[in-house]
Image (cartoon, rainbow, N blue to C red; front, side, top):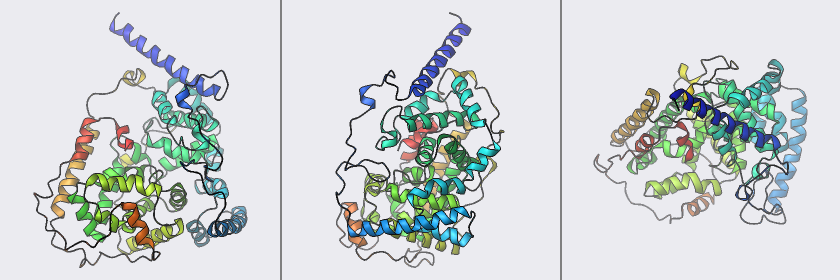
Amino acid sequence: MTDGEQQEALVKRAEDEREGIFRRYELGLDPTNKVDSWENPTFEIYHITDKYGFMHDSRLPETRDAQEVHRTKIEVERVKKWVKMLETWPPPPDKLHKRIYKGIPDRMRWPAWLRLLNVEQSIENNKNVYNRMLTLAKKYSTETRQIDADVNRQFRDNLAYRERYSVKQCSLFNVLNAYSIYNSELGYCQGMACVAGVLLLYMQEEQAFWALNTLITDQKYGMHGLFIEGFPKLTRFIDHHDRILSKIMRKLHKHFTKHNVDALLYAIKWFFVVFVERVPFSLSLRVWDIFLLDGDKVILSMAITILYLHKDELLHLKDMDAIIEYLQVKLHKNFGYNDDDAIQALERVMKKLKDLKLDVPPPAKSNEFPTRTLGDFVEADMEKKIGRRRNDYTDTEKQVITDVISRQEQNAIEVQSTVSYETSECATVTLTVPEDSHSIRSSLAGTSVASHGSSETMSLEDNNIHLKTANMLQNTPQREMLLGT
């Protein structure tokens, strides 16, 4: 077989695989659609499913406590106010700000998010574009296999996505494939599945497609720069996050540097998917509400809010693995604060950062936004058609590694600063928290809260950075690996 014949055979195999995957999603829940038993785990619906459709390991309380009853009454009143406000959209900015920071009632998120993202106008301006992109994807998408794999593991603890080839799984698959054609420069990156998955919990398929496009391409949100090769926005946000941390939480910044905790290790999902699966889902929705209103600066502020609220416990953790587990796992299960307290803290942090002129990172560069015309079909090259992965790095990927190494080396130098945390004029952010919050948060850390002694004297040798993050990057050239944490 000649090289040309072999290449044609590989292309044909990829086309057949794509056709087969699309066929299974088109069949959906049809009984003739073959689904492996492991793809549909058994589950109990009643008693263990919360209001958002997520299932829990233990049964939920059979009766509601007084606080829950009170919250329900408040939400009913807020629904009435939102119904009136949506009829006269847009409302005065101050009124909208106040109501969104109080929390959009869950049943009103669908119409509210549609308006905040201007979805209906996008659909009106782009009639039949979505269907055309989906048709092209069925024939030409080179991302189908990866999207299929990611759909199969997205929100599998939620009723909407639990069953293989359910309506929402099929919608998520279609949206991601269509968008990989619509924004050919970006294609597909794993974090996009989570973002689109959240949107589809509150929107129909085409609505979610245009909402996703707004989040990716609008400068207010600019998620294109997070997902594109080289992650230029991630690098910019991580650098600014470190800058904030070094100014207003110097002690915690030194602690992280001492234990080799690079922000890249804990902040990827914070930035890529706006805290979904890193804090309780109800709180992540509140952050999403504010993110859709105020844009990407909310992400930086929420990251600092989380570290501020939990800094005492983090300072008691003495190794990198424990710190990362606390931030990535424990806070998702039990944040230690109710949603209202957390959002009030976020609002105060946003104000403090604005006062310090730290609320907005340095301006984005041109590579954070699409350069190709959206919707113009660009046929993939042969390597992508046959699904062959690169074995070498692009210049952009090499720059990511260089940036990580440079940042860690700079942190090791900065930790030697003789300016104490306590005397730094930027060191304090005063927030009001519940009186019993310390004990709640202490239990999350799994350690005692015995007082710790005087601050340690650290030398550069003591803080030798092992560059584990950089090694991780060097061992995995694909951009998707960043989201596997």
